[in-house]
Length: 177
Image (cartoon, rainbow, N blue to C red):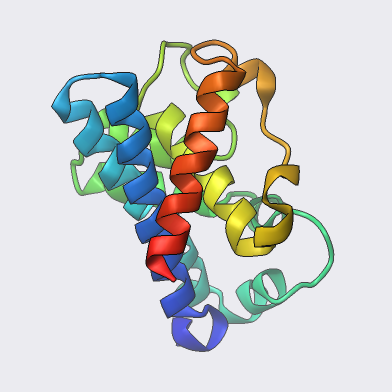
């Protein structure tokens, strides 16, 4: 029933792109291979909670995911259910005993500032990749207008890095098309 609420191909393509970009960003930052692999896993699974919400609460989820008004799905989820897809997905991944950096990245991919403060991590890569891929999926011609939390990103990167990551996002998006 989730397929009538969510466009599963679109969701799968989005998560695949975010995972590939998160790994590419992590690789550029030079953390150990394990952190790059965790970034890929987190990016590919960051929206798994949407499947759970669409399956468990089809009527409410349909209202949330089919709205045309500005705003974030995760904020509407929190208003409706008291919890977002990010938190539900992280809980599931925790039950599956996935590595903590993956669970943390899924849990906080919309609000990285709420996580324990640490240098660049799979959370950072997933958060940035999700925003950059969203930019291209929403409107490729205006891809640089998405607001990025500059304070958060400035903890581990400068404008030059952000420009490099945008170029990576553009390449990944174009390859997938």
